[in-house]
Image 1 (spheres, rainbow, N blue to C red):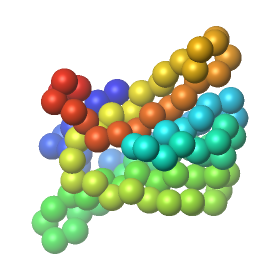
Image 2: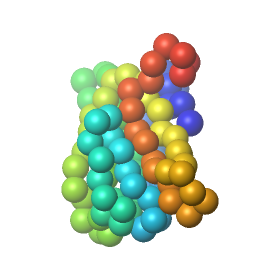
Image 3: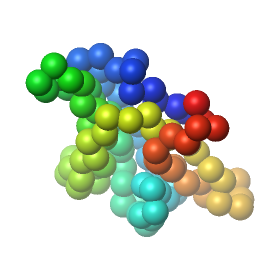
Amino acid sequence: MLYKYSTFQEGFTEEISVTDRQECHIDHIMFSKGLISKIVICAYKFDERISVHISLHMGNLKLATIVTYEDFVIEYRSLGNEKDHCLTLCKAKDYDK
């Protein structure tokens, strides 16, 4: 799914569940299966500019937050069989738009 920076408004929140059978890839970082349980996307307004915060959670523990002002993509990919999948988050490329 493509998330366009220009469409975010202050107060936007979305939560994406990650199953224990999914790996999670953020750009070139690969998290083991079961480590990331959810991704929370929120938009905040600072100094008249919207910033998009993408938080990685392990249960109720927030592990990290990525702050972006650019378009990004979250997609599911198969790891070669029906049971194992990968959730990938990366900066949108021209062909994604």
